[in-house]
Image 1 (cartoon, rainbow, N blue to C red):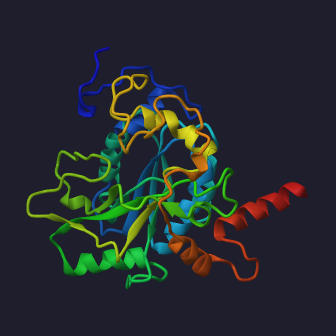
Image 2: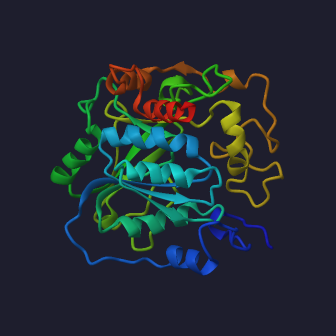
Image 3: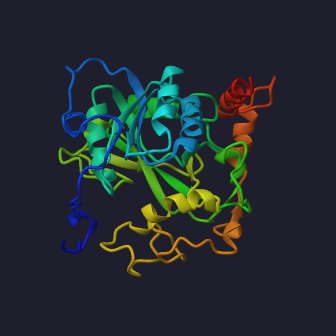
Length: 334
């Protein structure tokens, strides 16, 4: 196999991973063929597409929080997880969170997955957000959108008043372990409160009808048709909290996914400072002694305070994703 000079040149040549969900033919028919329905009136103002691998413990909090903000439909592309992610997705769908799971077993193909999802969701969704399960929209106190369904309300405004805007880009703040050595009991939104000072990236919400026919994207944003434009959302309106550097137990599981980003051979010391890789860690998953204190320049409790104030159940003191765990634990004890 020849080395890739750029990510766009990279081709993965390997056997399809084994899966318990059916034959190779069955998988390929689900992945490579789009069953496009006849276009009808779009049912949803806001949908979300994401790609996951072994993130079962993160999915529930992420879905329930963003459903509170107004997300109506979920497309989760599963890169051959074996940690029970499929069960979590099925449970949430049973609880009426309107989620579909799509098998996407190929490595390093997030861009292709997003292109596929853009086509798949086009007939159902007016806007589609492309984001990861460790990324959370946040509306600061200065924002006019601070209540329930606030993200949906923001997009409805653009739908009615700014037809030339096809992509809304939101800045991402990267959070560190925040002094923690173990998983935060009440979830990432409450547990992680220290971040880097300046935003590192952005993520986009797009109108699928306005995407360039090539569906080219670089994960963070798509190419859009001529005549349309993107908008950088002001940081006093909305932000994304990216819980990128969590406690070592979590980060270690994602280490090799990050360290292989945009290089032909991840074991070579190339591009080590990239914000998309694992800065300062080289190519070995060895926990630094000061890991809990890393990536901490500004203490930011904005989203934590927002979540505790708006989503806590007053009778139990639990957050929605905690209540499900508490119920399951009680059933097990019986």
